[in-house]
Amino acid sequence: MSARLKLTLSYAAVVVTSGVLLLAAVYVFLLRYVPDAVDFFPNRGDLTRAFIPSAVFVMLVLLAIGLGGGWWLAGRMLAPLDRIGAVARAVAQGSLSQRVGMEGPGDEFRDLADVFDSMLDRLEADVAEQQRFAANASHELRTPLAISQTMLEVARTDPDRDVDGLIDRLRQVNTRAIELTEALLVLSRAERRAFARESVEVSLLSEEAVETLAPLADRHGVTIDVGGDAGTVIGSPALLQQLVTNLVHNAIVHNVPAGGIVAARTHARPGAMALVIENTGPLLSPMMIETLTEPFQRGAERARTDDHVGVGLGLAIARRIAEAHDGELVLSPREGGGLVVTVWLPQAVI
Image (cartoon, rainbow, N blue to C red; front, side, top):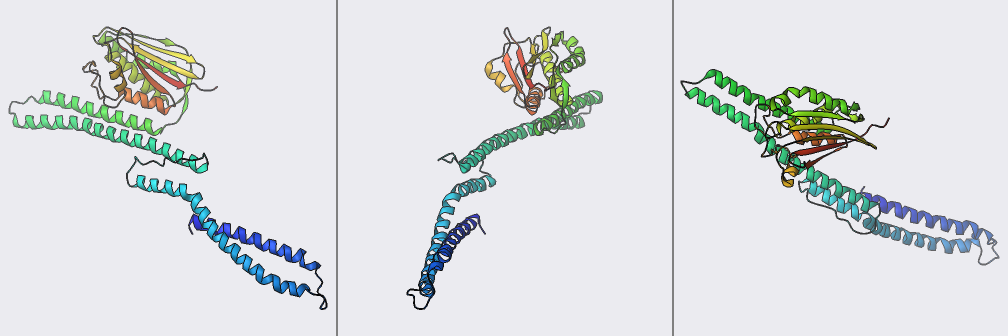
């Protein structure tokens, strides 16, 4: 049975049951005081014969009212669900732009419709982002494969081909494809929040990232200053280390021209930890800064060196990792040129 029919029968049952109880009360508590003597008119039998047909008629009227009124009331009450169901069917067919947009008093159905619309807003945004990301990823992964195929075809038709040089170039292209694939896996893991959480010391992550990237900084002539407050957050040590390493790596290779400064600082605030990484470099426009955290977006000022193949996912991965830990990544231009990246993470409650 449909929900409307169930509500109709329930409403009718309540009405009829109430009527039966009322008539039974009249019969039991009223007619029992009427004598049943033959010489008494009207006696109890006379009243019973007159009462029962009227009671049956009244019960039939109550049944009709219960069924008709129940069907109408159930339809009115379930109309919002029918509207939500119609939108859900349209969404199931691929029309993510549909919304319930229910108006009226703030009852349970209005709350359900608002939650459903909010879910559709998030779903539409996520699907659009995933489609854009898939298109960019397929393009980025196709590029190294196409380059490898072109080099092999040229080498096959070139009698004077340099085999050693071809192998080196193929190795570089293959390295870039591997780095891009690994970056995509890290990004997917952060988006799905598929990781175990434990206590992590943020300042130690900064020191480890700086120590790991010290040779890269020396080659670029970049001076790194690390320090700040101690503080712990709850999350994945591997992903948070990836976040800090990506930010420090970007700060080093973005120092154009070489010879700049990178500062990595941690700041403890009430209920939050802030990781601030800034680097010297060229002036960045606000419009460009807004696009730097998008997947496969590369700033025009980035250095194209062997140390930085540039798959365009460093800041995108950092942002997704921060969001997966209920944090936020904020980019702002540095006074005098360069970039300031601030990562806010909820501080662990001890």
